[in-house]
Image 1 (cartoon, rainbow, N blue to C red):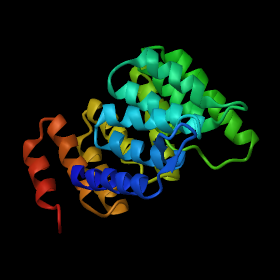
Image 2: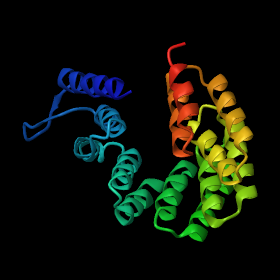
Image 3: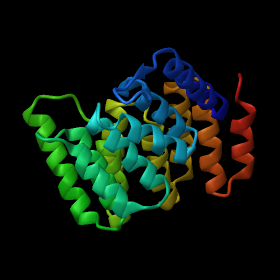
Image 4: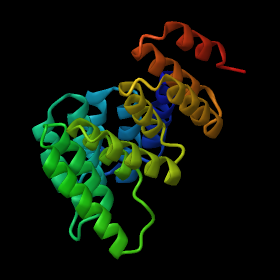
Length: 231
């Protein structure tokens, strides 16, 4: 996966060089979308300084996406107050549901669970009013927040809502497994991991299943999942 991200970053650099445009002052710049695509690839590869620099370079052209990337960089660094500030700038005017979900995540990471839930409610209401499809990650973040609040049943319901809408969201599968793990329902954890892998062919889901079982202390089960990679 890291190799894939490195290739994405290199691809972004090549395109920036190919489509570079001079400013009035003579300094070269690239189209904002291209800068932000490269910033996203750098972020996925955990190259945070590079991601921040590229995001700031594309910020003026596409402010909402630029601020979103800066918020995610700040979250990766654990700078949650900065992440909240950038996320608020990314929400937009009128607000975007996806921007509100990002803001809720930044708020939740600071331990303000009720504020995060209220922000998620706003995002869900806005999506419903505008007849949008379910917002990717909204129900997953609701599940995580409910779980941290101690509402395990509510968390399970939210995670299942996310999985039904977006079975490719592996974090939602893992979150649901964690709740069942807390409840010591090992059989359901195994069943869910099989469902996740079936819905998401390829190595990533299998490796994540292995990591999940490692976190539960099931090293033998984790080894079996890693042995399945590439089959």
